[in-house]
Amino acid sequence: MSLWPGANIPTLTGKTVIVTGANSGIGYYTALELAKAGAEVILACRNAGKGEAAAAKVNAEAPGRARFMALDLADLASVQSFATAFKEGHGTLDILINNAGVMALPRRQLTAQGFEMQFGVNFLGHFLLTALLLASLMKAPAPRVIQISSIAHRSGKLNFADLQFATNYKSWPVYGQSKLAMLVFAKELQRRADAGGWGILSLAAHPGVAATELIPNGPGNDSLMAKMMNIFKGLVMQPGDAGAWPTILAATDPAASPGAYYGPQGFMELRGKPGRAKAMPQALDAQTGARLWDEAEKLTGVPLKPGP
Image (cartoon, rainbow, N blue to C red; front, side, top):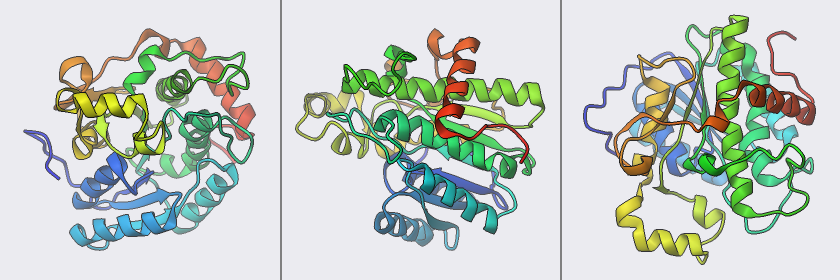
C-alpha cells in the first residue's frame, strides 16, 4: 500500500498494538503499516483462518511483527478470554485500535448475550475490551485508544429507550447509533482520563467511504447501497488502504490533541488525505457521554476504571 503525500510515520519499535478486525479492510492495512513501522501488532479477529492468513501476509513484509489472537466481539466471554490471554503474555499495551465492526445488517441479529448485533459488536464489545485492558494501557508511557466511527454518526441518535432496537429495527439508523456510540465513547473516555489522571490519549477516526468487506458482510452486494456505491465509486469511494489513513494518523500523529477525531479531508470527508474531522454536536454532549458509559457498564457488567 502507499501512504498519503507527506506521510511520515515515526518508529514504533518496542510498542505493542492491538487492532481488532484486522484480517481485512482498514484493519488489515492499519496493522500492516504499524508493523512496518516496528510495532508488535496483534491481529484480533473472529475468524481464525482469515486472521492467521492476514498475520502471515503482514509478516511477509514486516517479519516477526504480527500475531493473530482470537477475539469474537459478539461474545463477551470471548472478549474476557482474549484480555486474559493478552495480559498473561504482555506487560503493557501502547495502542488499542477498536476497529472491527458490522454494518447495516438487513435483519435484526443478536450477540451471544442477546444484544442487538451492531450495537453489541461495534460498541459494547469494544467498551468491555477497553475496560479489561485499561490497566495494561496505563502501564505504557504514552498509551492511545482509538475508536473507529463513521460519517454515519452524523445522522445517528442514541435510542436510550431501546438501545437494542427490540422494536422498530431499521438497519441504517441502528448502524448510525452504533457509530455515534463509538465517537461518544471516545470523547467520554478522554474526559474521564483527564479527570482521573489516567495518562491516556483517547482518539477517534473514520475512513470516509472505503472499498472494504463491510458492505458484502452487511447489507450485501445485491443491496441498494452496494449498487449505488458501484455507480458512484469513482466519485465517492476510495481504496481500502486509503480508508486506513485516518486510523494510522490517529495512531501515530505526534501532534495529536486529547479527544481528536480524524478523517479524510476531501469533499464531505468522503475521501482524500487524512486530517482532523468534524464531530456532530450529538457526539460532544457530556451528559450523553456519561449516560452511555453508565449503560455500557450495566450491560457488560464490568466498570471501566482503574483498579482491580
